[in-house]
Length: 155
Image 1: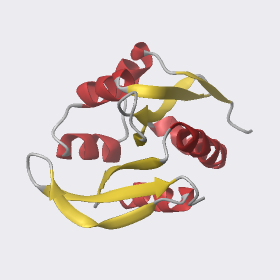
Image 2: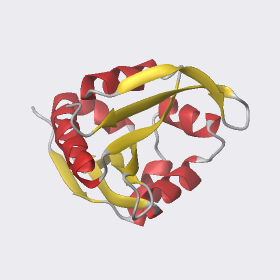
Image 3: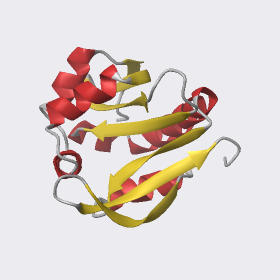
């Protein structure tokens, strides 16, 4: 049976719910950047010009969005996931590609950083069309992170 996927506008309650059940790799990445899951998701949500939450079979699966300042042409995409995301991978890839096109409509330059050891996330970013750079030390522990970016017109 196919998993039921629902996408809704994100709320702060979704951010807090997702923080309690993040996949371990996502939690590792957030903590390597120096935040708790709750703080990171709250910050992403509050600084977003767009944010959505996906539920798989009624369970919170992920939240994504585009953070940044109001008048900037630069946006910082984010995606944080919970275990149910693995039950609908193809649908979420299809939706992800469409959401990135929307992000590029809002901002001409998208970039942020991903933990270098989070190879599944790096693979997904490449699948979406992002260029992924070499690792550089970032965060309070100076752990390796890779810049990922895309410009309007690259897709």
